[in-house]
Image (cartoon, rainbow, N blue to C red; front, side, top):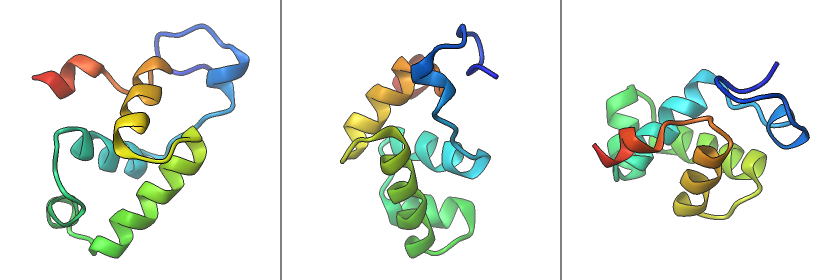
Length: 84
């Protein structure tokens, strides 16, 4: 199954973010700190950092900006929502 709105390709077929990972990534893209994301999702900062580590691993990136760019390119998030 391809990411929403994209044809199935090797690049986007292999990457799956969980619902929670997408929530974390969306809040991070808004510019929120890990602590702010944790408060918004009623979890610990450690849990947010765990999700971020999984996101970075799945997207094969090493920081928030790279994660945003790759997720947008793959169609996992809507880039205009972050600019809002």
